[in-house]
Length: 146
Image 1 (cartoon, rainbow, N blue to C red):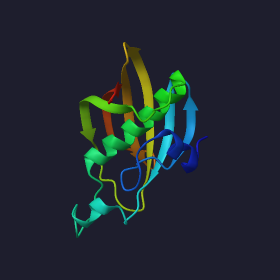
Image 2: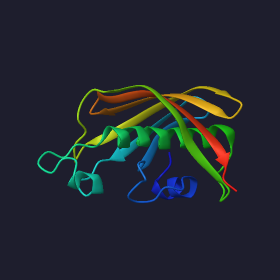
Image 3: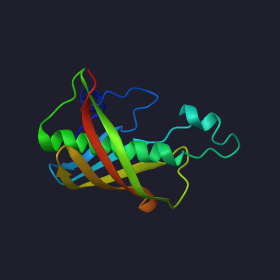
Image 4: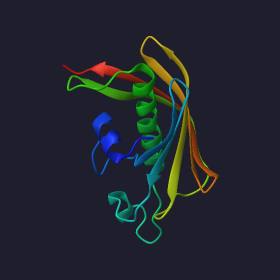
């Protein structure tokens, strides 16, 4: 539904911190299914861990948050400008169920639970080949920086 060029137009993140490669499904106000191709060339694999590379859990959470941001923008019609940043405001109930390794395709399934006064609450799940890798409740907000 969104290719990398459309994602780059919506998110301010760039390599090595862009964590969404493609959006496969998006249902405005409800849900997004996005994809992160996990490559051995990711810079964190050099030190996490040298003999058995594993994608850090915090990076999996960041991938879910970036998918959540794309869902927020689609749902509200808003776009970031140079004066705004979309921030994490909280992470609850984060659980990591299996390692994510180079060569995996991380599927990011994020649902919008509610929006109230500019605070967005999401349920995020990341899976590999149908097997749950990580899950969390995410809270995000957009703020002016200037």
